[in-house]
Image 1 (cartoon, rainbow, N blue to C red):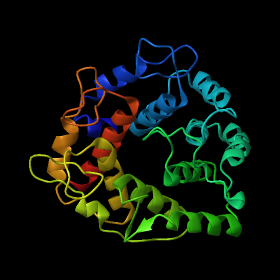
Image 2: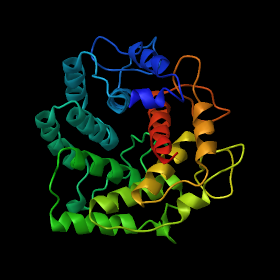
Image 3: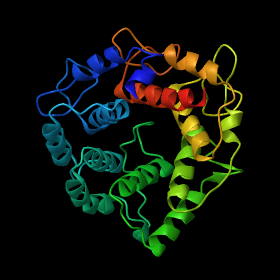
Image 4: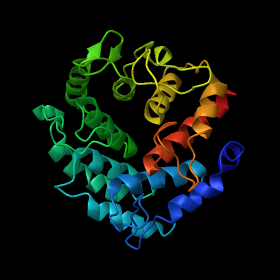
Length: 284
């Protein structure tokens, strides 16, 4: 995996970037000088190592960090990330223990969909579809069996945000459309959309946008659009342009930034860039 990606970007620098930001408690913080380790950065460090086929250094410490960090005050998205991270690290029993905490915050049977609880990885406060998406990822990671009543409640909730053939709150966005389709697909519902194709940017720019007919492209809609196309059994139309866009995002420190203009490296941006590139090179 890493060798294929290394033909396009500097994987050695990526690994160095991640490892320099690992702390003694087993957690990670994308700002290397700070000891403010957190679930989000630790989750994406695990995802990067997994994507590259590399063992997480001092894995037991990271398992302990995630387990201890997922507490009642932790937002729904953070708890879900901790659960999935634990599962990836092979600590499924510990991940399953945290499912009780997740359902205290996210309980469709009580119409509790984590709205207003904050803790978004995207926008500061979790959107209606984001918390559901992450809860579904956590359930999938531990093979949690959803009963029919919960399944119907989640489907009904997600479909409240359908606008045309896509999803959003006030208008369809790439991020929320993918999050909705992932959730529905996990529940056995397959839907089609043209939203991702409408947000594809070709030519000199490359990448994808949140809404059609807008610029510039960013890594998050690019990541979600490519995942969405893959889910639908489709391919991007301008693969070379997208590869060029992603390659341009790697910073000198080895991490990746969000766009051509915005320059800071984060673990989230880095994982999404590598995961997007991994999809694209399969289509070359």
